[in-house]
Image (cartoon, rainbow, N blue to C red; front, side):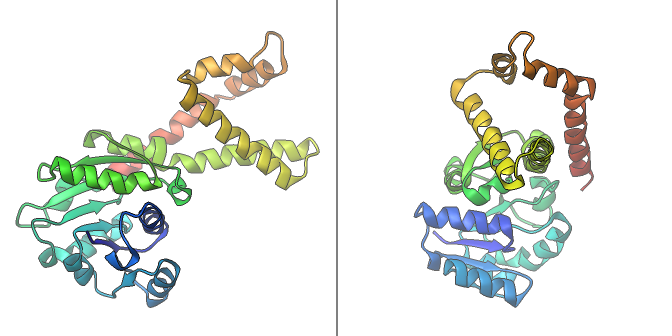
Length: 264
């Protein structure tokens, strides 16, 4: 099996790293293209993969082709590879807002298209990817793609109608989580903690809290109540968050990303 990447940014590098770590492919079975020679040289040196300046050549050489470019550049790339894709090749797109139907309309023949919404924690093997497919993708094709994505974390199949929502809940939300960690750390610094120590405590707490929820099977509300002792310190902080519309603000941020994705 050969896998090609058009675009060699952070998400492509996360997937390449996961593929190699899990022995899904060897470096010489992976090829990639990027807009600049500098990027191609850096990625080739880092991972030992083959690179090419031609997007069409990468498409011709691949059994699975990952379109890892920003949405605004996807149309240009599709125009370049139209004649290089055969009926057996799987096209995997990570471009936000671009549906399988939209991509398929560039081709005058049936093509296999899988749409993926990943997130940046894939860079450390802890990503979360939502996956959907068009009618030409077989169950075997889907299983193969999920296996590749699971090398970078969790991957689950969702309805394509939910992909914009997933983009808000998991695609954009790492930025919101980092802002929360930063705010926790700032409060720690205000209280006298050294900044780097405050970052470590805040980040570990967020990571541990998520792990506790996933492994315990308890809801966030149940786990919050476990921390809130009657007349204790934590409930005072919870009251402050509620007074300042913490939940509503987070929901509004997610809603804003969903609406933006729909307009892409």
